[in-house]
Image (cartoon, rainbow, N blue to C red; front, side, top):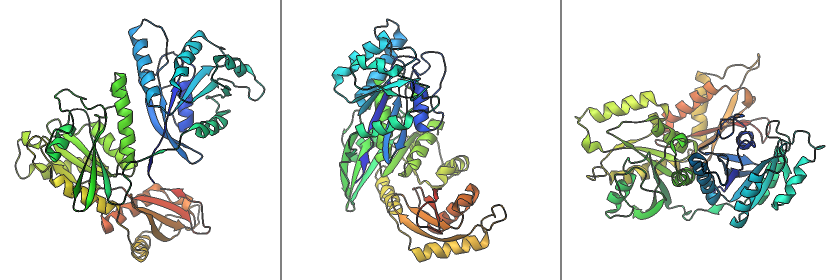
Length: 448
């Protein structure tokens, strides 16, 4: 059964190492890290995995309780918005500094929430000999867990504790085979709510000329050709660096989770303004999550055009943005209703492609032709052989390729196979995933 990953909020006063810890969990440099306090003012959030558990981790700005400064108060509100959304709170403190009055004030603020809290004593660099973290028992939040986010010491033990405290992932409401969850996503004010209202013929969600009117997702469902389509109108997505208030951040985090849950993402862009970098990021995030994608060019009624305008725009965007080569376009107007109902046909088409299964004999016929025409490059004088393949799952279509040296197959060769699989079977509007497996043993291999 599909489920929504829980959310873990990382909070604490400035400069205790929250962003360093955040980066350590993700295994890559995602948040800006500096010795200057208060660098993280807006939150980062990302999907993380540990020991088979998936969760969203949220990095918040340093909280300064009681500060009269407007910036400090804004950061505090944003951090509390993350706390409200969280299923687990990590309060990070600095073991080198000892218990700070701000740590005590933040602990007093968090304790009444009733949410599970893990107390993380950072900068304990001499584990297991050092005992400075024991001073933090006095915060009344249970046993302090010592870590060094810089070196990584203790982080594995902490993550083990973290996943023990995570709730069971909440199942999605609609999980039967005939239901298709459609997330209507895009930047603020591109007409998402107007599109949903036009589709359903009534005012299902609030519509306003002000950007970002839709704060919470709204579900609306309809039956179409025997399938139940559940439309989720989401808050406008924008770059995290542009999110200035806690309510908008809260909406952005929820929308990111909904994209992960969706079967199909209908990405609306403003035809008058054109496709922005953030529109591309939204397409990429849906693609990476395994959702089908349809690109809706809204406000098409306001464009001066002839019969060549739409094909020319589509060709230009596909040349500029590789992912769009496989994405169906829909030129529509939520205001006039032009092609809004056509979106239902496109959704069913993409859903069918996403659920499509290719017989194993056909996969191997195509694969044999590809490797005969262009064999994989040798690795240190050894021949690399892709021996056979099979489709192992749908939603999205996923193929396992079995090879004698799977770790030696270069990315450009995987792209070659991917593109040729596309030519053979299209899979319009949905990503294809390739997994490499060792043909000499039953397990192992790497994803590609």
